Length: 70
Image 1: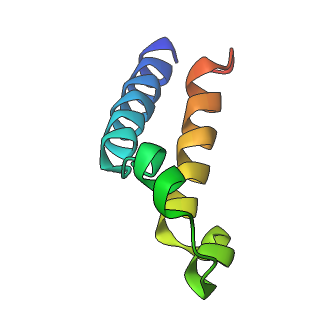
Image 2: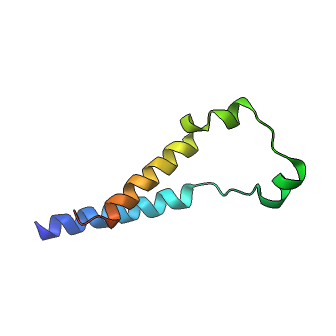
């Protein structure tokens, strides 16, 4: 049982590392403040985008990794 949980823990850790590395950076810092941001259809509906799914999966895997279940 302990070996199975260790294997699951390792798989979750590797998946979390891959998901975090696949996320895009947010580089709207200084440039965005100078040029202003434009409200587009894409910016208003980001909750259905690939980025949103990746962020959700990252949060779930992080919670699993830090939980006492494993």
